Length: 183
Image (cartoon, rainbow, N blue to C red):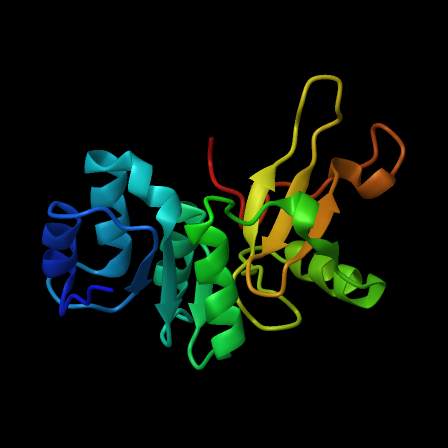
């Protein structure tokens, strides 16, 4: 295990030895967590899937958006040690969290998420733990467009389809899909 006192030290550390997992606080001196992620993505792309964030200040809307755009898991402080260790084990095993191993949100949680997602500018957070949800397109050949909302902490997901199952031609809210990253 290696610790770094700031973002620049962390960047220097990855140049000297390989890492199975990188746990990165969002608020660090000299190079914040999101900027460190982007440096790793540019210089060491093989490491970007080995990183996850921890934070006690992820409620800042700008920071929350930046974190969501990375697509990396975030554990909000204070977090349970079992959640932390589970995420470390998944990433170290080379099997990052994927939807197939997740369980669906309950019907009540799905309703709450859909209601939140319909409000302009609403941040999508897990109704169980409050962590930001990662939004991924699940469009494939022969499939209708859909998005999967995932919580990397609770291991829950919700698949959202345009028109929500309504008949073709029914109105869909205008504007970008909340939480969706531009392609």
